[in-house]
Length: 427
Image 1 (cartoon, rainbow, N blue to C red):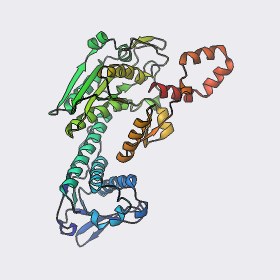
Image 2 (image 1 turned 90 degrees about the vertical axis):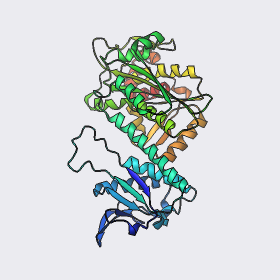
Image 3 (image 1 turned 60 degrees about the horizontal axis):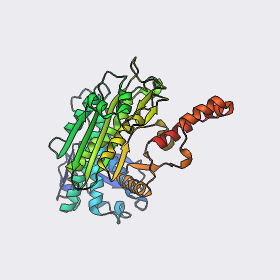
């Protein structure tokens, strides 16, 4: 999408541009007005007194969404004509608002069309946005940065949406390398033999049921000296559940079980693209979790990279296994902080819904930082507890189930809750 700043007044632009007019009306208002050969898309922004950063982000997205609904490829707007929008945003710099607007324009324009037949007139996307508001070089630079962030998010989406048959572990490793073409990022990918030599038994145990070779990819961007920030992303390119096969309603879209990996890949690439003064390392443990005659069985014991053994009670707990080896591997970098991103459990979605990710950490300062950054980006996180009481050992549960009938009945009634608790500790 082309995003430009113009010194012209919005009324002086060619009639091929649909003007966007923001109104202090209900947010459901979206109407197209034609007058003197010029089209104006009127959008309700809500009351200015109610505006905040979160609602500004949603407003920017709705502008592009409304334009796409009306099949308008070129739009223009002048924020200076709608001072009510910014009445409550005085604490946010013009540069930051410019960055947020550009980022969310780009994100709202995304549609995954790789496997769709291209229509005669092309897919419906906003091709150009012209901003006629007064600007400075700093504001325009902020918009470019925001657009780069939006493009990186869209690249994550495209990677995550790719079907499992087209996004195997080896292809994911290739996508990681391609994402940093021309950037100062080193990419190393380990194959099965190298992982066996290292002792990554947890990752290999997940992969053993698939005909697709597992990979472990290390991406490093050294924008500064010192201890690195290590990002680990779960890269299960398709999760069938293994021998504990997922039910029909749960197995669809399990090609997206590598969304954590796609986020890590494009975060490292974006850090390099923006020339951040940070040392960032991305770790991508990738495998397919499939049922077969060679698959790991419930009850099997795997030896992880740390040397610790893991009894597999349910083969659909593959995310914790691959991350166990990745997090152990992260220790060799003596990191300042380690963040893992993973689609670990549907129970988190039950708890938080569509608009927030679960955050699990014992570090209060890190939790506050990530929560604040999520709020600023419009990609929210909600901290979940990691109390000592949640350290429930599965072995104790099994023994109690066998010994006490009342405990077995309690476990069956509350199984979903206990599974979620185990995830909290495992994450």
